[in-house]
Image 1 (cartoon, rainbow, N blue to C red):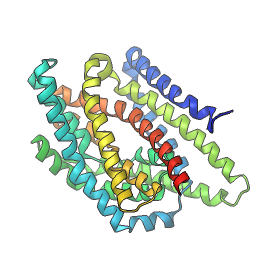
Image 2: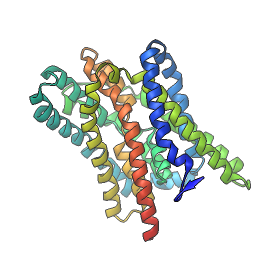
Image 3: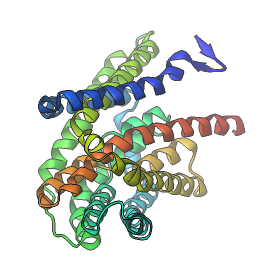
Length: 337
């Protein structure tokens, strides 16, 4: 069934996302004790089946060409490491010290911890779910994969320096944490996707297979939302006011940074697909690294960890909103070209 070019699945999907978020919070409220164990296995499984269908659409040769495109890589590196961390820190310092602290909603100590948590959310670019957002928005997935490969190396080097400079704390980034993410969320889905592609691309019903895998991706996304809100939703339950406070900063950050990336690429004459891939790469953040740093380096400051846990709860619905905006831009782009 379709309504003015939109199928029923597309129309219902935002409602399914909202239901998944509510279901996750409900499970977190009533079954919080078992949530952590489920999250250990549930999140990697959900992410794999979100990323694997996207990888069936890209070939290794295209990824290699994108990896060597130094112009786009240079722009991505500049925005991810010279702009993004300082933008999120500037927004946090301004909003909390000039707006929230005078309102006396939280004391100075809590505000300082929340600012550090927001900085942690902004320093490391995403190396997993960014490929899902790029795929859903019909961006250049091969370029997105090449960006993830670059970021997986660069963030190990840059994150400790950026955290020290912006939060005045020395941290150690365990390279094995990054390596684990790369293996689980890049290499394994890429190998599985390309094996599927090579085996089935010559089949007459390959387009139907891709459509089926698209449904698998959507189900995996809903499943992952439930698990993340189940395991990380305690921040909403215990400190609901932090959601809108942190949310204002992060919403501003995501939308400003995405559009800086997207419009900068457009200005340099990149097409919609390439510009979208770059926009999501510089906007999406690596919440796994942020949470790990918060738990290890800031264990004495609970609101740092709470803030980083709120990050993925905000990022998923916000990225889906940006996906919807990009699909509207894509239709306009197609009409103009």
